[in-house]
Image 1 (cartoon, one colour):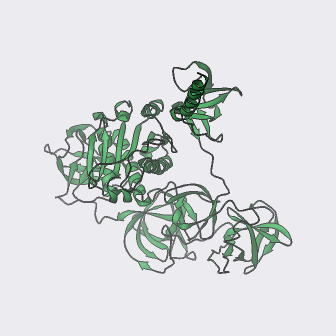
Image 2: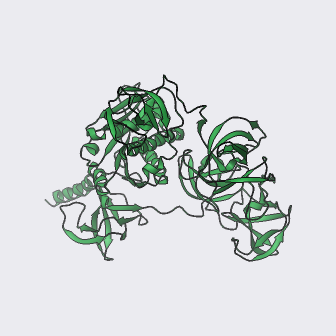
Image 3: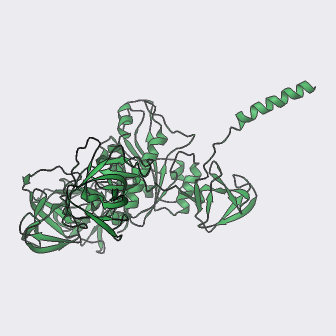
Length: 603
């Protein structure tokens, strides 16, 4: 009997770890914040457990453990309890400010968001040091003295932040050469610090540390700082890298034109629309800083580029006035200037959506005179702003919005340049499908769906945030979430739109394409608009906007769509969707689709 009892005991101890496997330990560095006025703390991870306390909005807690959609925290310094994760917001540790990179080209554009369609905030130049705040796909969020925004990763050389202060960048940089006369040497890395000496052009310095736009050197036996923009940096082979000269320590005449500029003296002549990005831009009588200032134009003014010489642009503005401006302060718009705003008689619009309003004037404030059905066509008589004047049977003046129709010819004059105004302030919940033990589908060569959806979510989130949207992500890392908790987040934040991101699979590896799903018919237009942009930008097979009976759509009270962004079971698409260019295309498409949707419902 005793032996039998021992046998049972050992068997029981052996079985316990199998039935109840050890849960992963969570770092106490992970913090969450209460996002509701008052939240119950329970004795276990579920609503059936007793309430043992409460926490309030804004309070921060360390994560002790997780189980499904519940998080274990410590309250009152000694008592542990469980709270529902969907009522908490996550706080990720910030990227160390010591993470730095060197700009490898002149005139690298710093943009408002991670994408070429975002406006230019400023520029950084070759050999300038920037702090790296974040990185997503091919874009890096940087902080520099004069610019804070996103730049292309291709034009940065990253520095290992783990190096010590005295040996910082020792492998990459050993010496620098001063490029201006009477360069101030300061006791601290700041223009407000004391000047303790001067250096002249051609003098070499030993670089000890780089901090943002400043270089730490040895000067007369003591530590000192000089501005990095006036030091030409030499690598370990003593090959000098090109740096920029300046007229003063605070102002440089930088040559900037494209995302990364290659030196050339090409002269081109064509016409193209552009927007002024400087607060005030001098117009000169010739293509040089020595040119006489004849006028000035302001930020946001639209001009026509009629000639390009070196990196200067001859423009037409205020009617027929012409002059030269620095090209790096112009943001070119897509497409050439139309020869005429008068449309050919055989040009037509095609209605994209049922119930499209036809109005008596080119604005949403005008009365609706009829509603058109999807697929109907109308002859274009004229265009006023973003509206088309069309011919209807009653011969009355009639107008339709340009963003709810397609035309028989490409009309680049109806631009999406101001799409951010329709996204600003909107609450968008991004749901990266699967996660944790739920890998989702597995690709032809082993790609896990959960890993691709999080990449798409991260890049899309940054684009939407840059446009001013309030973005909520259901998961920011590899963890499992129930479908109910994803929907609960949509309800709690009163999402203007909920988007669930997925990648598809099928037994037949030849099946391919993109599909947008909706459950409620009221969300069909949302799905159609996003689907249209997805197909246009990715060029993948259009599988349409379809009805889908998915939990996150069916149980969601907010506008919701589920997107299948390519087939991982198709080897070609599996390889395609993993590339950064594809991620750029697909997130831009969703971004524009959302902007189009919010624009359409705002009228």
